Length: 111
Image 1: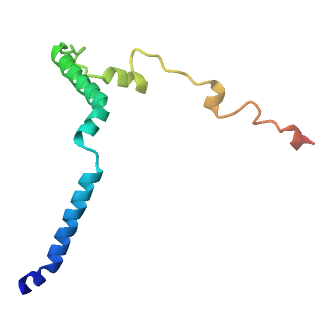
Image 2 (image 1 turned 60 degrees about the vertical axis):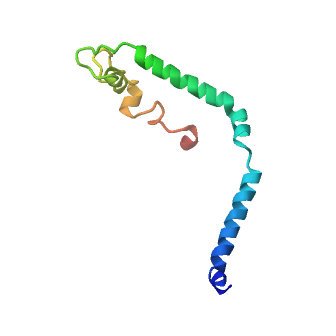
Image 3 (image 1 turned 90 degrees about the vertical axis):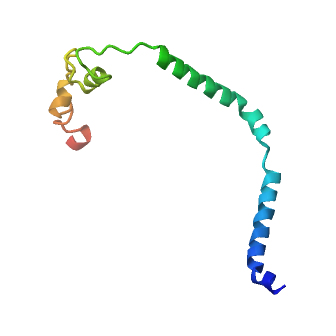
């Protein structure tokens, strides 16, 4: 009996862990309930992944134009450094930094 009293804390902690584990297993839904609720999500995700794999296998490799990396042309176009696009000019009054009424006083100031 004295040997059991040495381990009374260990036995109490182990008993508490077992009781908590059993109560959690009693409260949580079963795996089949979760599967029944989320089966459309699982199915659509699986079909999407199958489609990605099929397109990856069946698509021919893309031919690079003049050694250009993939997406480099669109990045140049967006950045405005593309040879195909003309630069967009801003309106002259915005470029100079002046507005149409910045040099004149308002009616309140003149009175």
